[in-house]
Length: 378
Ligand code: THG
Image (cartoon, rainbow, N blue to C red; front, top):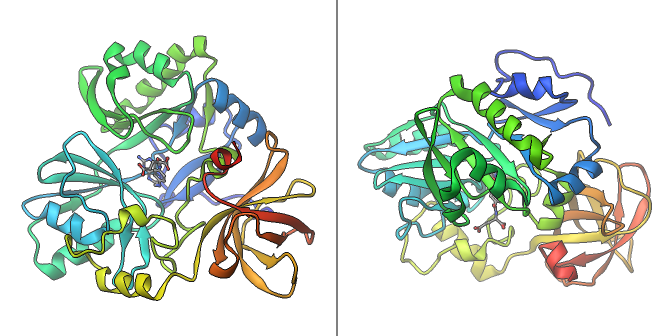
């Protein structure tokens, strides 16, 4: 289903890399955090998927905006915003943190970077965290500065990412551990580079903190990447569903809580931390959650794009709706359709037979599976 061309304007912000992305033949964009996210290049999603698993790709993920919170009360504010215990976070660490509201609803699922004892970045998914944080700080009279700095992440993803990054930034980059960052020199500036990214193929994210260096950074990596068969890319739907990486606004919204999203390890309810939504989440946990994210493997012809959730019905009683597929695509490697879905408690066991009512009018048969899909199949 197409919605025609997107009408560009200043509100839909370009990134420091958009010129370069256009030069290498981008075919379409999405908009995240009021900014352009490249979604397709010359290659098909399937070709991109196989390329990402074998080589290295350069992704303009500037839409992963940073909400910088600094000042005397920065740690307190961030702990108030998340159900995960951040008290033991160290400088140089990245943490995946659910942000929740007073009802326990998911506000966002950013990566938190601790930059200094009283300075953090929240590397956000698609919701206006900056406004939420400013409102909280103002209301609570906290001493913090909250801003969106000029930081535009560029992701280098795939099995050859480490060799490419070592060629550009030096051998020391190999020492950076998963979900850690360090600072590396680029054109006599110091840039934060983390071993992270929105794929399971390994790689790095460069948090470039100066837009005027965008072309330079892209060109440098692009040139060095030629011998590694580098290709322009973007978060790959097949790879991310197989790997069980969630997309805020798709898999979950403010209507869902982090327990429904399977983030139990990041929900501390024993009273050792205080955060917005603690009481709500305690009650939700005591009552028992009624649904949770699962993978679905389903048969039939390759499914269409899932632009609105598809009803999932019980396999043996097609009149009972038991959940919704929120992202789905055909996996050429598994030779099946795969999806992420929110499934009711009575039906969420692995192996549960279901049918999926796809947007093309076809009803496809499938089964519920645990996450991540690929590991659960091995
Ligand atoms: N990188 C950065 N910022 C981001 C994303 C990112 N902001 C938006 C969005 N992605 C936030 N959502 C996620 C989802 C999954 C992961 C990171 C951000 C992720 N998960 C790992 C996994 O599931 O294997 C590790 C999670 C963990 O340590 O618990 O990487 O991609 N900068």
